Length: 134
Length: 332
Image (cartoon, rainbow over all chains, first blue to last red; front, side, top):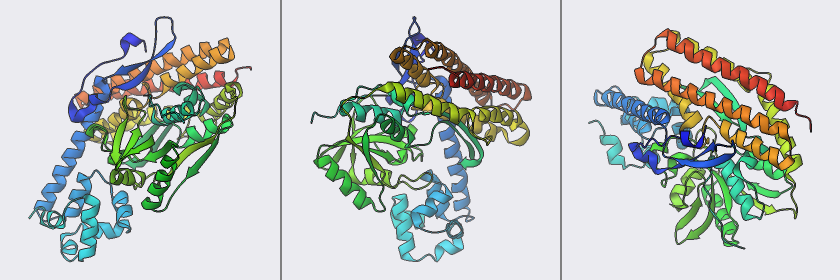
């Protein structure tokens, strides 16, 4: 890549172009130099696509919570961009235990300390957690 | 001790390594740190999924570059891991009280000074904390042009991010540097190790062979997965290759820059020629990303474009294979 080929495709999505990252490119004589770049349409598209997928997934979980098929736990897990193994590590529990808490009936009976722990991990209040989707 | 100087670099770990060594009076560039630390790599693990997407990497595993560079240059370092955030933060405070800048591994999700676009769960980011102002820690994040600040809680969370890999509060610092350092042997050792990692793994998921593996997988994508999955899988390869901290072309330009600098340092013509060749391979990676993005954008699963993309990647795989064979045979 030559210096004049370093793309400067600005992308305002979620502050992406605030990072003017460093790229390595060659001068006319072939020697390397570092150049700042605002981004490249190719990776801008990939970034945007990944976020949009996360938002779509979240909307799907939200529908399930509102329909009473899932507890609020998977919603906030997805909202924090977490996966089941990560949430299980945060909670100090097995994955199957967390999965049980996805069931609205099990969630309704969860003791206060566990709810507190969840709300701390998700950085929300207990009220927000238990009232979500009602 | 003079104040810590923040410099922006392309990649977090080679950048942290260069900044920490420069602070200790060793004049080393980022490409040099990347090359000596044998940072270039390729790996594709179809069965290790993040958010349901198969993992691809263009670099060696985290923590490796700093360790190898300091080892090869005879620099004494100290690395520590912790079981509790309080201990990890206390050890950091103690080092800062002695004016020692501290390198550490952190989870990107909790680094609130970064724009939201980058804040996914990625637990192998490197940064330097070089001071404290009131309750705020002064951060030198090599991918940013300016230094940043972060609060105690966010930093503690980042250092104890959960998932894979887990940083466990890992911190590293330079203890002692030799009076003279010679890069020549370190360059040779770094190159030799890179050739070994790229050419010799006996499993198909690592090294140059993994590029062909990914190419064959891509050909299968439209047969096996939904259009949405196909698009996300390709998008993930693009992100690993270009999004942040690679210097472009999945670290290929960074490594070519290293070979060029090494050629000048050791006065070795052949390395200069190889640098040019690797730059051309980097350009091919850029073209590959461009084609992949076009497929993502069209959201199509027409077989012709996937076959074409796969062929592009097979060609890159062949070229990298030959390249590392020739690099291995360089006579010193």
